[in-house]
Structure formats: C-alpha cells, structure tokens
Amino acid sequence: MSEVYRSFEPGLHTLTWSSLNIDAYIAKVHRSLDRFESSISNINKLIAEKIDHILDDELMNSSCLLFSIDYLRSKLWSPTEFVTQMRSHLNEQSIIIGEKLSQIQQTFREVEDMLKLNSTTTQKSRSSTSSTRRVKSTTPAINNEAMLTFIRYYYDKMNYCIQKLIERSLIHFIELASITETKYLIDQTKLIRFLFEGQNIDEHSMNIDQQRIKYRLI
Image (cartoon, rainbow, N blue to C red; front, side):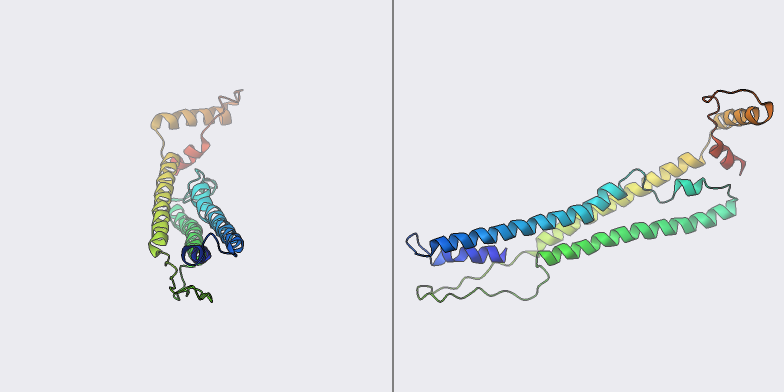
C-alpha cells in the first residue's frame, strides 16, 4: 500500500497536465498497481490453501472425528483396556488436530509478514529533487486493526470447527455404543440361526450388526 501511495504522490503534489514526464508517471502507477494486485492474489491463495482448506475441507469434513471408528471396531475390548487405550488414542488424535491449528496460526504470521505489518520502522517519503516541490507528504500507516479483525474472524471459525468436531464425535460414539433391547435380540437371533441352525439365509437377512453384539457382550 505504501508503494502504491508513493507512486501516486507526484500527481497529487507536483505534476500538472502540462508536465513533460506525465507518461512516465502513469507507467509507474500502473506498475505499482500490478504489484499490489499480485500481492493480494498471493495472500488470497495463501489463505485458501493453508487456512480455509484445513478448516472447511479437513476439520469440517464429516469423517473427521476425535477417534477412529475402524480403531474402535478393531477388536473386542475389556472395559479397563477400552478406557486406557481410548484415552491414549484420543490424545493422539488431539495432537494431530492441534498441529493443524498450529499451521493456521503460523499462516497468520505469514499473512502479516506479506502485508508488512510487523515492521516497526516507518518508511520515509522519497524526497524530490524538483525545485517546485516544497511540501513532503508522509505515507499513511497501515492500521493493524485490519489484521486483528482478520485474526479474530478465523479464531472464531476455528472455535466453531472444534465445537462441531466434538459434537460430531460424541454423536458417532453414542451411535456405536448404544443399542436397544429389540435390536439386540433381533441381531442375536440372526446370528444364532446362521451359526447353529445352518439355514439358508439370503444376503439381506444376513445383515447382522455384529459390532453391536460385540459391545453388548462386553
């Protein structure tokens, strides 16, 4: 922004329509605007790839949970073993999710650096050698409030994603762990007939919820 402002300065203070170097001035302004548009495009690409992708495509994905369903169904668990192993498994999953959130926070700093908001030194306006120039103008400082607004927006979005992730995980866990008496008896009857009676059962009737029976037998 400061470069764009400086490129416009001569037209605001020294140049007139009769100035001989107006064509060079216009070309300089266009170059500054092109660089500015390129910077904005790079920033938007960075946000899309390193922030929005993680939040929208990964953490908000319906398959993203605090535990692995395949791991939960991988064996028959004793109550003590289940509590111990699931605590360890949840910690591992939390670390993975935490790393994704750390990547987002690192991207905040990258965006801030690209916008040159970290610099504590102010750039001085280039002095003109023209004898007609008497007043020096200063480049307006970029307001850090814009960056703070940007960070607050994505922190709110991160909190929302984590909230939905926890909610989604609890719903899946309840569905896996719960069973009605009727459903249990139906599945148990199917399994007994299939194992001991040797009856020919079509594929549809063999749809036995063996995982629920596992949990019930525990």
